[in-house]
Image (cartoon, rainbow, N blue to C red; front, side, top):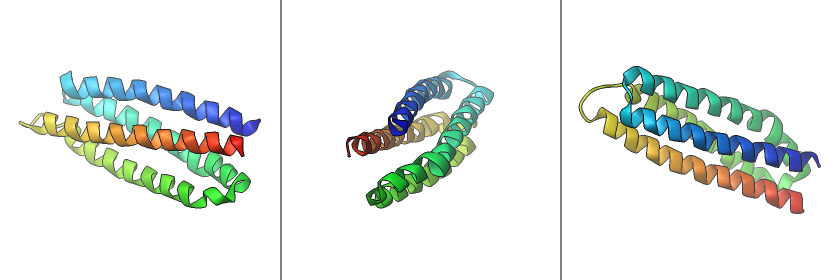
Length: 133
């Protein structure tokens, strides 16, 4: 029962991140440097809270119930670390008004957004499989 609740909670958070990605994309496309920096900061801090919850609460609980998920959970955590680095790099370039910086930041953001979607799909599939077992 608790696992089903956590699966729904994660899915709801992932849906909210899609909205955040949409607003961040709009800020990168159309906003000034301050707006772009603020949007990237909001996305990064929201994802950090989500990753921390997964890494310290949800993943350890899932591991306890399904120890066979160890490798996949470790890979998901490794992806979290990579996302943190990508977001930090994007924040560095995302607020720049230099020529080409906006398009480079937008392209980097699109790659990150796609990777996050695939990551979220993996997490949700893992939780779904865990509920079936």
